[in-house]
Length: 224
Image 1 (cartoon, helix red, strand yellow):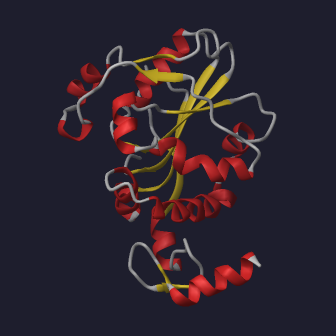
Image 2 (image 1 turned 45 degrees about the vertical axis):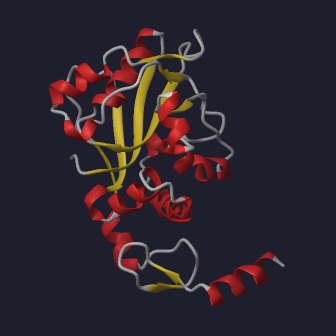
């Protein structure tokens, strides 16, 4: 019955690639050219003193994913979510072994979305870092843990220099559950990474709380 309904919806509302507008066969699909241009699973370079032990990006921000992220993040368009799920599924065969091990059920790693301040999340209606990864992780039998809390509002990062970003985020995150980090490995989840200031500050708090290792996974970045 569900397949029949989906076929009817596809007929009435033809699906289009979210990046170029070309017709695609299924809702949430990309055309092959746009998907190939956006997909780029890779490790990201970190400074020697980074509290992050590793960071990974799944795609290129300016390779097309910027438009999708902005649709969800700033316009509240949840209709972008099926495209993220399709994109994440396309990443499956390109994940390095280290990430496969972290994302394996029973690995012992905690998956922690970077939190928004409560006022920002109330205004937006969701935390995009949690929402983007939710269905993909659920299909793997995994879920996120709200281990961190953003305890004060911060300025928008896009208008700040690298030094201003670090100052903006200083003491902005605390543990939501003291002692929950334990000696676990923790994988931070976010939509994008630019300078890495936000993820580094989250990792610093978690390492101070006793986390054995902190890595990060983001949907998109233009960093190398």
